[in-house]
Length: 114
Image (tube, rainbow, N blue to C red):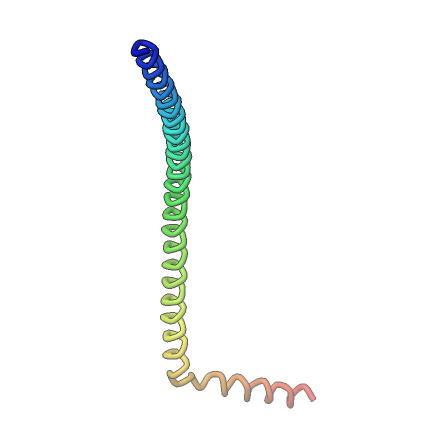
């Protein structure tokens, strides 16, 4: 009987070991699957990072180009303002009397022709 009881005890232990081994195997499979998913996400993040880096570089270049264009507009505005100041300063100068004489001379010529 003792041998029979010991045999049953050993069989129960073996069954418990087998069950524990199956649980461990399932746990290892789950860990492996999680690691594969993590690896996939890491690769996707690396790809997104590359795309973002390229986009950032392009955006930076476009911002520099925009700044250059804005700077050109500012220069043009300054040149136009300087041109307006010159025009205003010329307009402020007294006009020569020749223009009046020309007007009078054209009237005199009209009278002669009539």
